[in-house]
Image (cartoon, rainbow, N blue to C red):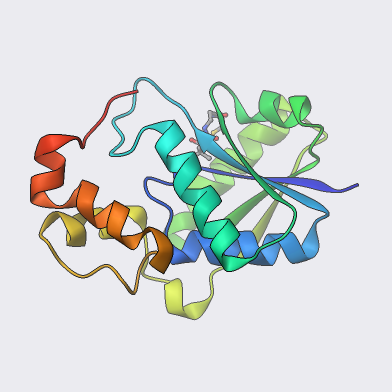
Amino acid sequence: MSVAIYPGSFDPITLGHLDVIARASRVFDHVVVAVMVNPAKRFSFQAEERVRLIQRAVRDAGIPRVEVESFGGLLADYARLRQASVIVKGLRALSDFEYEFQMALTNKKLNPDLETIFLTTTADYMFLSSSMVKQVAGFGGDISAFVPACIREDISRRLSPEGSAIGGANHE
Ligand code: PNS
């Protein structure tokens, strides 16, 4: 069985991420979406919130054979634990490439059995990132073109100027 891990911060998940998950699920038998836990990093959503948002989006989109889990530590170790031989990453633009290349080579050194495979972005989502979503929502803008419809309200509420003041900007 081919198991692929799609790792990321997903703070929050965007339509671009969901597109990569859907395409990866057509290529691999099982896809594990791995949500990074890092106490040193500042996230807008806690890891369990990010997991639940992704689970809802995946379920709503009807994407089969996908599991969502959070992980801390090294991705190379997590891949061993999950007996995954492939890491899937999305590539949007040339600007992503250097960083992704560095990560792929580091992971290969740490776990030589692991391959990183890149899916090029769907053109519609080339510009899209979680940071953009946070910026637009942070000023009360409409994010319906950027995030899955079934979780839009939860994301808007948390990232809106009022929401951030109440419950946002969590540390892990
Ligand atoms: O969505 P992001 O923030 O670009 O995802 C980055 C992520 C989670 C894939 C990366 O930071 C990661 O793999 N973190 C785990 C720590 C690790 O294994 N580091 C060494 C490889 S660079």
